[in-house]
Image (cartoon, rainbow, N blue to C red):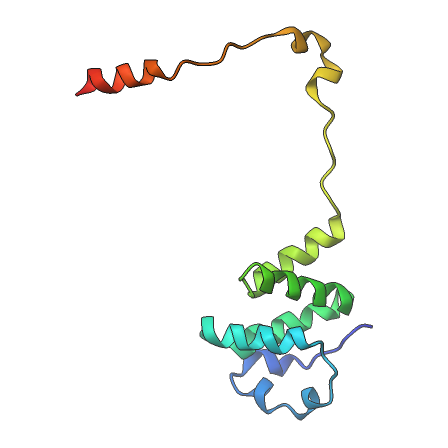
Length: 128
């Protein structure tokens, strides 16, 4: 589902709260939770909330819903957090690098002794 939003909503403090078009939408409950959290932590919560809704213009609604849920779980229900999560979801997990010893087996033969931390104590005592 794609979404088209009126640009004027993101420019006014009261437009989102008074918008009758939003009353008929069936948004996931997470959106109301995000709006309430934004009201607690931001100066212009409705503007930021509408900008979050507008992410559905360019991304699938389900992906944005998941991102909002994840942002709330991280206690950061902000637009930039949601944008970052959407980008991460689209990109997928980062590629795994093979262990260095697979490319350079001679490195597996290197043994590093366990450090003795008492040497640091001697340095600290010497500095006093």
